[in-house]
Length: 116
Image 1: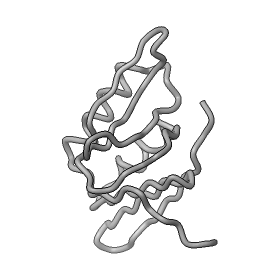
Image 2 (image 1 turned 30 degrees about the horizontal axis):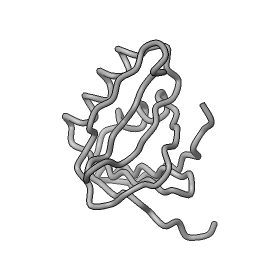
Image 3 (image 1 turned 30 degrees about the vertical axis):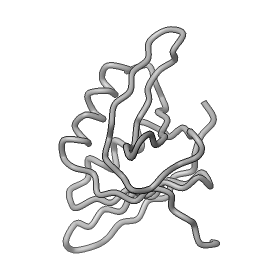
Image 4 (image 1 turned 180 degrees about the horizontal axis):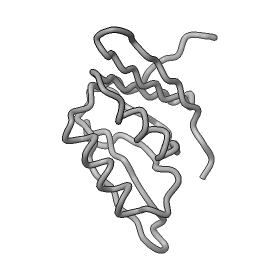
């Protein structure tokens, strides 16, 4: 696998992960969410502006993304539910990486971006 250039690298807080769960509940019909950066903030977007949509700031970041990409809600929530310290990386190349360090083992999950 070729090296990936990460546009955003953050350590999500417990509060950010909880906000993601709340948004998932509010937009239960959404199977994906999208990400972008605006003014130093990593934003998560749910839903469709034509019907029911919402967004929130997941984290502050020094990085940036030039593309808005979609990610699977259920998979991301499942990974964030695992016990341990988490790191999140997102690339404009269409890859999200979540690393979970349980203290005994480090799990690395790479997710491809999805079409909506």
